[in-house]
Amino acid sequence: MSETQEIKDGLTVLEETEGREDATYDHIVKYTGFLGGIQVLTILVSVVRNKLAAVLLSTAGVGLSALYQSVIGFLHNTSNLGISFSSIKEIAEYYGENHPEKVLLQVEVVRTWSVWTGLAGMLLCLLFSPAISYWAFGDTSHILPLCLLSPVMGFMAVTVGEISILKAVRRLKRVALISVLGAAATLLLTVPFYYFWGMSGVVPALVVSTLGVMVAHLSLSLPVFPWRVNLLSRSHFRKGWSMVRLGVPYIMATAVNMSVAMGISLFITNWGSLSDVGLYGMGYNLVITYAGVVFTAVDADYFPRLSSVNADVGRMNETINRQIKVCVLLMSPFLVLFMICMPLAIRVLYSSSFLPMTGMAVCASMHMFFKSMTLPVAYASLAKGDAVMYLCMEAAYDIFMAVCVIVGFVYGGILGTGIALALAGVFDWWMIYAVYGRCYGFKPDKAARPFTAAQFLCVAAALFLGMQSEVWLKVAAGGCVLGASVWLSASAIRKEITLFSELKRRIGGRFGKRRRLSK
Image 1 (tube, rainbow, N blue to C red):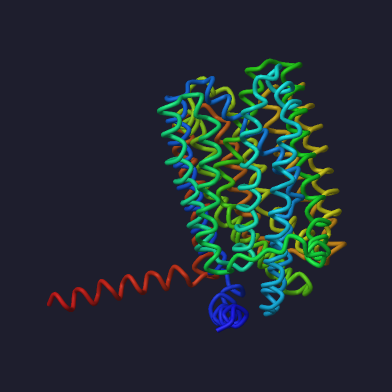
Image 2: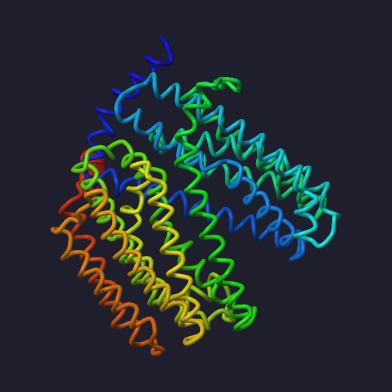
C-alpha cells in the first residue's frame, strides 16, 4: 500500500470519529483536559529538574544554564522564521480538505525548510558567538562553549518542525506523549552531567538533552510520515515562502512582546528596585504559567481545527464560540479558587517573602478571565493567513499594556501593575472583538452571554475577597462564590457535553456487571 493511500485511509477514519467530535463540545473539553493534564505533568517534571539543578549546580551554575538557554532561544526564534507555527496552518488546511497528496508534499516542504533554518541557526551561533560572549558575559571566555552549542540550533529546528506536523494532522495523543517523553529525556540526560561535572557539564547537558528530545519527536512522527527532504528543490523553496510570510510577522510580534517585557523590567528597576522587578516578574509568571495550563490545547488542538474551516465564516464562528465557552467554563472556577487562596499558593510555590505581590497577582488574574474570551478569537487572523493583522493587534496590545503597567507602577506600586494588567485584558477583549468582527465577520454567541456574565460576577467577587485580609471572610464567602462558579460550569457541562454522562454510564455498567457476577 502506498503512503498516499495510507494517509487517505487515515483521513477516512478521522472523518468517521474525530470529524464528528469537531462539531460538539465533547472533543474540546476532552482534549483541553487531556492536554492540560499532560502540561501539569510536564511542569512537575520541570520542577524536579530545576530543583536537582539548583542542588547540583548552585545559583551560579543555574544562572549560566539559564543564560545559555536564553541565547539559544533568541537565535532559534530569529532563524526559524516562524515556520514552526505557520506550517500548522498550511498542513491543517490540506488535511481538513482531504488532500493526502498535498499533505505529503507539504510535510516534505516543512521538513526541508526546518533543516535549512536549523543550518542557518547553527551558522548564526558560530558567527555571533564572540559578540554574544562579550555582550552577555563581558569578555570572550565563552566563545568556545557557545560554538559547541551550535548543534542545538539544528536539533531544535527539526524538533519544532516535527511537532508542528503532528499538531496539524491532529495526532494529539502523540503530541501529548512527546511532551512527557521530552521532559523526561531532559531530566534523565542533564542530571548525570550536572552530577559528575558540575558547571562544566552545562554545555554537554544542553547538547545531549536537546538531541534526546529530537530523537523522541522523530520516533513518534516518522511512523506517521517517513522522513523525506529535498534540500535543493526550487519548488520546495517557493512553496515555503507562504509559511515564511505568515511566520515572520508572528516572530516580529514575539520580538515586540519580548522588547516590551524587557522595557517594563528596566523601568521598574530604575523607578523602583530589583526587589520590585522580582515581585512583578514572579507575580506575572505565577498567573500566566499556572492559569495558562487551560490554554495548552489551544495551540495543539484548536488552531489546526480553526485553520481547516477558516474559509467558512459560519463554521469558523461556531468553532471559535465553542472554544470560548469551554475556556470560560474551565478557567472561571480555577481563577476563583486561585484568587481566594493566593497567599497560600505563594507560600507553597515560592516563599513568604513574596507575599507582597499577593494583591498584584489577584488583580492580574482578572486578565486571564478576559484572555479566555479573546485568545480563541485572536487565532482567527493566523488561521486566515493574515499575519500582518496579527502583528498589528499584538503590537497595539503590548504598547497599551506597557503604558498601563508603567502608569500603574508609578501611582500604585506593585499593586498598580496588577490593576494595569486587568485593564489591559479588558482593552484586548474590546479591541479584538471590534476589529475581528468587522474584518472577519466574527459574531459572539448571544446564547452564551448569561453564562459568561454570571461567571464574570463570580470572578469579580473572588477578586474582592482575594484583596481582603480576614481569613474567615475568604473561607465563608469564598466557598459560596466557588460553589456558584462550579455549579454554573457543571450545569453547562450537563447541558452541552455528553462526555461525562457517557463516562458515568460506562463506569456504572462496569460496577453493575461486577456485582451481578459476584452474586
